[in-house]
Length: 288
Image 1 (cartoon, rainbow, N blue to C red):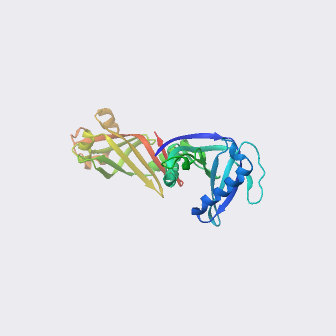
Image 2: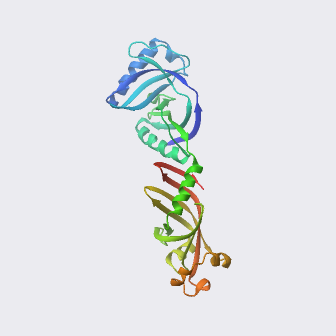
Image 3: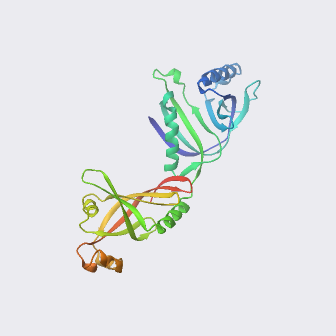
């Protein structure tokens, strides 16, 4: 599937359209009726006038407006109505695909919006056909998928994630085993700086420490009350004695009876690189 993705402010566009409610398999018939009407009006002589499908969810289920983008306002008649595509910020995917790939392309679009720190806003999503698939030997068309979006306040999300981590004494820390599998373990954190750095105490000769020596890639997960955060990054084995002394607590004697100088006393520092948030019913992916 060939595509490019962008966030773009679109200007309002005039359209004429036929409303389609019901069997989606009948949409080609609706397109045919609209094209016949547009031909009689001379609208298809302008190559800039593009076919558009506009989707909306109503009380009777999903419906579609099959329209043509026109450069100036055109009056409808009979079943053909005039309307507009609203201005605003849109997530736009430019695809080169077959018609059977369109559902998968829409699914991809909603994943891409979260990766670009935005979310759907109120409004209608639509497809703009930049080419006719019937003119291609493999039925391939150039298609723009457009979703009205608004930017997500990442600072607010990260502050909520930091508060969530502060309330979680135990986190899940995953290393990578010698056979390439993730190995998640519950473990208590002893210090954190926001969500960018987390310090953990463990045994020098534990499986996870040995695994991090071979492969520093790591994952951290924590959750509470339906909110969750997944972090990916790298683990460093801390050798600085001043840091190890600063992070030492009396309860650690139960695990490391030799104190700070116990050879089994080990501090791991996890540094975040990427975050996946599910907070307040918002799914967001971001770099740290």
